[in-house]
Image 1 (cartoon, rainbow, N blue to C red):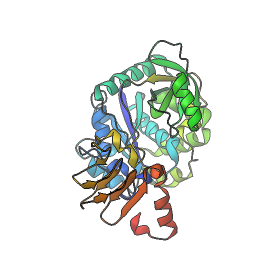
Image 2 (cartoon, rainbow, N blue to C red):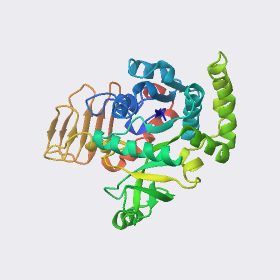
Image 3 (tube, one colour):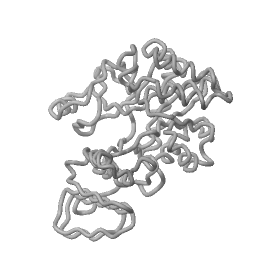
Image 4 (cartoon, one colour):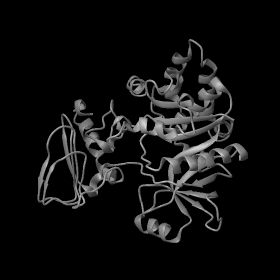
Amino acid sequence: MKNYGVVMAGGGGTRFWPLSRQELPKQFLNLTGDDLMVNETIARLQPTIDPKDIFIVTNISQAPLMREATAGTILAGHILAEPAARNTAACIGYAAMEIRKKYGDGIMSVFASDHYIKDIAGFNQTLKLAINLAAETGRLITIGIKPTFPAVGYGYIKYDINEMKNFHEVIEFVEKPDIMTARKYLKGGGYLWNSGMFVWKVSTILDYFEKLLPDIYDCLMKIEKDMLTDREQETIASIYPTIPKISIDYGIMERAREVMVVESQFDWSDVGSWDALEALHAKDENGNITNREQILIDTNNCVVYAKSKLIATLGVEDLIIVEAEDAIMVCHKDKAQSVREIPDELKKQGKVEFL
């Protein structure tokens, strides 16, 4: 059975303001110094999934830039443009319908476009195991990450700790915990971080849509009817914005039976905020992270990221300082997850030129 990759790339990445903008979100940033995050994602899949079999689902306003960024790697017809953001269930269902319409059944692996994984060999080892399980069992497979600290920003997957293997039956999906609960999970074991990476047969996930999300399935069927015709784009523009908003986790994964989780054999970071850059860059002797040479005097545990200007600091600690062409952002590291409040405030004030 053929393998297909689906990369979800429609997010805004507002926690990476001021570099991330509506027309240039996080997946189009080069945060590692090597390549754009979306291209790093594609390259990571290539040992297992051929680039010509990879699909990208993005926002219609970002589609031209996505075609430009991935030219020569991803087929132009495999870049699917959403006319409205309807959360991950719609995104995944749309890609599944497109694959079925064009190529029939196959194994469909789903990834975010903006995660960071250094161990490419370990990642592909895990992915191949998940693909084999999906092909052999016909079940929904998710990839879980072994926790390395008591994270409160991730959902968790509970599994049977007595199963001495690297894939398990899922007991339940758990919401983002408070710090005390996260510490208990880390100490007791039996829990994995929910990475948002999934593997399943195209036919299997569409069957679940029909059973558990019939309203979305009906919309997708209307779109599929006109796929590969001259009415396709008109139908998508008309139907897609009416699809109910719900995540694949809430809509299907948490309600489905007999879900399996494969335990990752690789490092992982969702690079969710500026303080997560420590997964991408080495710290200096004072715990600072920079993307280029700066002047840091009596400065400790700071993230200093500049687009073009020299940044000089003196006598500060635990700060995030980011310079873009038209804006500078300074916040305490404790507020890294709250940076999205700045674009929200800019929107309220009508300063759309900074969005």
